[in-house]
Length: 321
Image 1 (tube, rainbow, N blue to C red):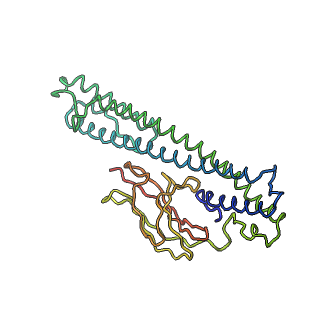
Image 2 (cartoon, helix red, strand yellow):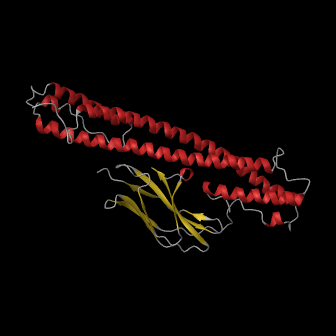
Image 3 (tube, rainbow, N blue to C red):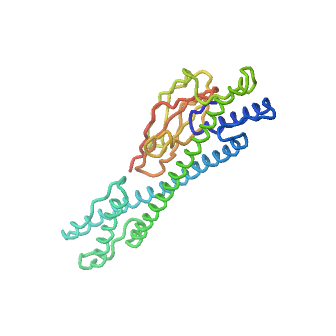
């Protein structure tokens, strides 16, 4: 199986490990060594490290999605409360000096300070109104739907700051883990490349180890055709829906839906769904659990020969409604 994605490193390195065992069996007392006397035991140990690094990124990516979703959900909820407060202020108060102080709602996608500053300003105005309720002709402090109070609004703004901190911390940890994983992948890729070079110098062409030498990259002209994908947010089921044409690939193994929160980056893609080759649709809310967020997806055609093609990335936006 050639290297086509991060997910292919596991099975490909196992093929190289097995072939190295075969090569050593054929060589007898002089096992195959790479640069720096790097041997099969070193490769086996590095493969364990590599798998742990890949799994660590998968775990941290899941954590980052959860904390980002919690942050974005809190942002959306506070925007709804801001809208309610604005309606209450303009509906109950006529004093122009108070109306002029009511901040415009921030954009859902604004960065932290630009998002929270208008909410904090709204909380200050709410405080002034509650303090002067009788002067303004109100029967008491302003409360919103569900007896939502100023105190709860202030608590939710503070909680949002914590959500921002958690999301930032998890995204930083994920970025560090990705860098560490990529360094490990580069190193083990170089060792597989060296193995393919060295084996031809120490074993004859008819050697079983050489006959079964794993490929490191796909053969020219073996990339399967991609499928034509369309996608959109389905407001009825509150999920993203991807549809595509049936695959025409020969040696078809399966399809994979892969995704990235936000814009698509091949180096950061994650497997979202593992589907049979006959599938022509996927539905889900992966990385889209909060209104106003977006994610990007590809549908990969995968063959029994270890080749794949993801085609064009599809961007799905969950509306902020």
